[in-house]
Length: 213
Image (cartoon, rainbow, N blue to C red; front, side, top):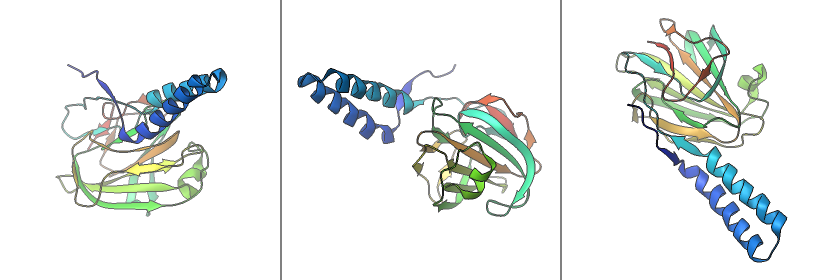
């Protein structure tokens, strides 16, 4: 049975509380338009930072989507920054209306975390992966298979949050970070991964099956 509870990710509370406080102050001094704008921002922040419970697939070796959004790339490629040798890459674009909490695609141990400052091009463009700010998390599964999940900032996104460090153990579908206000997540997988999604499909973090490893 699926869980339906929805919480708020901790990073959202400052936005919610500040805008709610501003709405209260404006209302007390009878500034209606600023009060309504602040109230709207409070509602939007509460909705944007929602963190719904998700139940991952039970299939052995299931690769779980790390992000809500639209699949924009599925291909074989090489990118020595994130994966040694040929790899299968899946890119998921999150627009401002998607849940932005990111989750681990597979159970494993974090072997590396690398943050690189950069630009803020639109995350669905090719140059975003080359020039945008990113945080790459490399993990090793219990079967000693390595993969890498890369959080990439977008045109509006100005903050990548990564809550893990080398040595941390994650379960498939476990929360590990988020990106604020529109962004992208790339996954680099071994060639033996059986990919089961196509470009254009919508996926949900911690729930949708991307493939089997």
